[in-house]
Image (cartoon, rainbow, N blue to C red; front, side):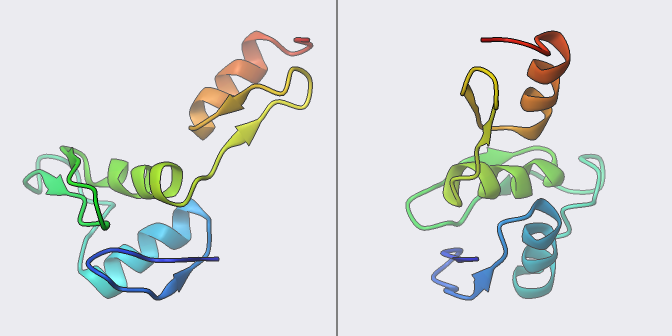
Length: 98
């Protein structure tokens, strides 16, 4: 778990994408499952950050990787990747990397 620093919230949130999305929806009224056609750009209100996102779903991933420090580490080459999709792609393209 990690403290949320969205507008000084300080509630503790689990370091999982679904839980970050759930927290943003329940406590900050942000629907991260909305499509970009449904909403306007969303500004990250984490302390010290003003990144804007056109897709609400990207906001949860942004919080998870940028503010909660989640990384995916390759067990073969020890590469550190900030996004799960990049880790999956790395694993598929280089299954036995060194």
